[in-house]
Amino acid sequence: YLDEDRVTRTPPGDRDVAMVFQSYALYPHMSVRDNLAFALKIRDESRQAIAERVDRAATMLGIHELLDRKPRQLSGGQRQRVALGRALVREPRLFLLDEPLSNLDAKLRVQMRAELKLLFDRLATTVVYVTHDQAEAMTMSDRVAIFNHGVVQQIGEPLALYNHPANVFVAGFLGSPPMNFLHGEFSGDGAEIRGEGFAIPMEGQPIAASRGQRVVVGIRPEDIQIGAPDEHALSSQVTLVEPMGSATVLYVPVGDQLITVETDKESRFEAGTAIGLTLPPERVHVFDAASENSMRQR
Image (cartoon, rainbow, N blue to C red; front, top):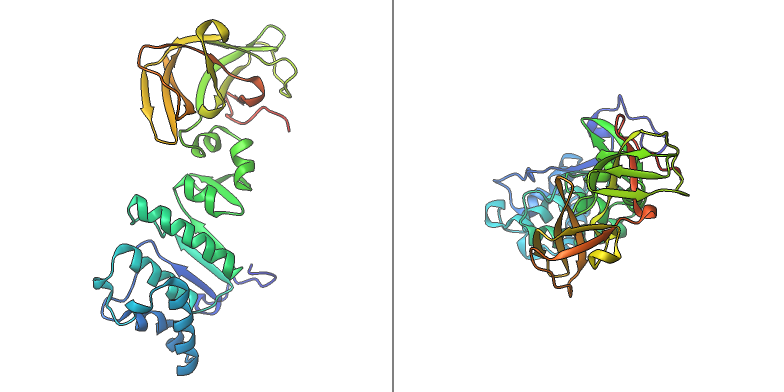
């Protein structure tokens, strides 16, 4: 459906949908101007209408100086703008974008991500955007639908999915560095989760569990508290330090696996430094080990 109109059996050309392909799919023998105008010519638009729409799209995307060039004369970012412009001139009810930034280098991808977001906000038109990049999903979307092998795992606002993932797959997909996962079980009367090298008190947390139930504990690197070994519940030592500029990422063994801990950029740690860790119960995500679904009640 588009709004209230069912378009399942409507011929694609009549659905008023514009698509931007991952490979750009520009006509190599045509100039940028002719690429932008092609769909409008097919629809028998007037010359004046075509010229006005091409001019408006070129202005919006900053490609006026490229209108007489051929695609082979353009950079990747410029080709991306032309592909978007070809969709924009149609002024459709819906845009479909298939990984439009995947062929760009990292710096240009970040730049184009911001430009696309601003463009979408100005157009106020629905955009369905397919991506494998969780940063694009988080930063560009009003709502995100996460798929795994063609099955929808969770739908919602980006921060809602980040803070309240429905299962292990969603939790691991969103976030960089990704969420840490530890395997354990509820002990005693269900007030504590124990695993190799860690114990987390869970009394008072909105989680219904039975004694001995196997679980997967998830916690994001930025939620782990660090300090002196004798001040925190878990003692370990730093194995690897990764300065990232805006933050520093530590790799710390817990039991037989490494977890990542994100600290501020001013932190000074070296490999071999003794360290204490606390996993705050209110920031811990608990998933059933069998189904991998979240056990935390909201």
